[in-house]
Image 1 (cartoon, rainbow, N blue to C red):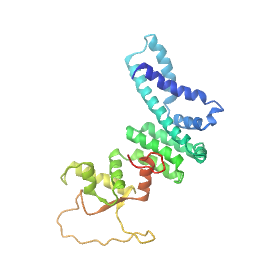
Image 2: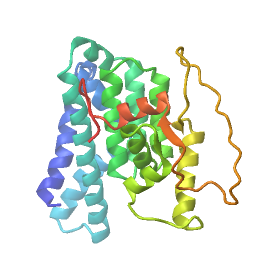
Image 3: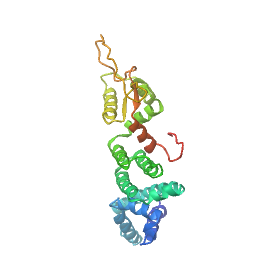
Length: 271
């Protein structure tokens, strides 16, 4: 990253902050910027240190370790600024109800929690899930804020590999473990392999977490019907790659996909 780009990253954030005086902090963008940046403890120190270190660099007083530190934080600041800008652009183009929601304390609480987790997230995929969730949580105000906070916790708790399984079941309801495995891997694995152990762990995590479940028939009013267990004379246990039992997302799991993996638009689809 060049010195010019690094300096621009910091200057963009400093420019936004400079607009947020007593009057500016009450604007839609001002509230969003304050909530997002305020939840990240290192941001103020990084901006202050950046200005001081640039002056020292011009005098030749900055060492390699300081330069590495500065470059790493500039990357984070640029990424942070871009994420906040993406959220604001989408919400600002929406209607008046979204604008009101955007300035509410309930939504700003979600922003603070979301960006705190965004800062902890180690991958681009998780950061994107948080960005989409915070955008949809403002624009699609039909889900309780407590559930949005739960979804933020899920983003932190689960691995991207869990998300791949969730996406596959969302796209193909009623799919089996074997079909999911083939779609994601395309190769066979032994039942006593580390791959099989990991795959069983993924399915178990998502099942006990209330995100996926085995397919069940229901009555007209949505009551689940009991399944009749069939006696088996097989001498082997159920395969990790079983091709008989079907899996669906729970209703909670479907909302998690819609809010964290889809861009805000009226009829979104997973990319």
